[in-house]
Image (cartoon, rainbow, N blue to C red; front, top):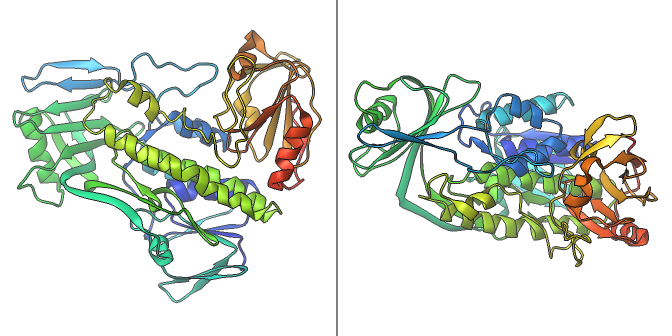
Length: 495
């Protein structure tokens, strides 16, 4: 219907990631946003390792890393002015299986800019000032009405238009949860004098109010966060920010010169009970809103987008429409778990989060027990199971060139990883990676990471999760045929 197959409503990180994923599969996409232009504030500033892995699949992780920072020690100041420095992820280091072991400090606006640039490379631009006011579902597609009187049709719609989502409201989907007016914060991006940019500065004033000032890499700004106290104005302003900083830091020590963005926030923890109504899907903040603690919101939204994108692309190419049901089945439980995690992290300092901090990295998120993860064990040495994240590994080509497995997973395709033999390519857009015959497992890290036995096959989904692992090629082929994966774009990876 219309001149595009998928209409994405909302041009934040979630909507842009979904559009990038769809375009990569050759899907015609249009992106609308009610705002007059791109968002200018940091809002989220922490990209978790799992999200970086998924954006690596789109080929843009390197662009973000170039303007972000993995290691930013937290400098905690006491009311007397003394301080201690703390590693927010003590002992966490990259490994062969997890090259992005730490969160990347990068402002949300730069993530959006990077994804918009990627879309522009495919001649897709965001239409700003396009407010959706109506939605009609038909047998063959969806038509949305815009505030300017125009109408846009598409085969499917993704509602990624934030916590106050117009798409969610038009669908009549409940947004269950709670708002706590007693937990309020102010946040803003400020240019200041008086602090170095090599630490994330946190102060506790004599009244007990905490102020955090985090330098945003490759900018001249800091993100300021502080709690709202009784009697504070509800709207932030530069004079209010300055008075709060003076109270916590000491008058005259830090001077705020200007603010590029300011906002107030209250604790709002909600999620939908459905991710799909007919041909319309909800993703990101339109489906779940979190406490900002732990940096889970933007990351969970981008992961929604990557999960949904390849499935829509497959169905538009002829796969079974039932494949789309797996989006809600896989992502709704993840969102529920992340909401609980972000709430448990409130008030727990960096460096003291232990297992909660490890969980916040999102590398352990999985789809075990879901509709696309058949029951079974891991590899011979206890490797990842169906539904688990596929780990990275260093490999060598026969001519001695180094290549990462993640490079070979970059789509748009599935990947069939074979150990010690060249597997027969099954039906569908599947690339074959043969460890042993074609690629040298330098140091045995691929076998160790996957717990692989000789002759074993590991089928990796387009979003970097394991679909099935088996020594039986017929089982792999049957798995793909059950999903109705279209037999197009196939080939063999010869790195």
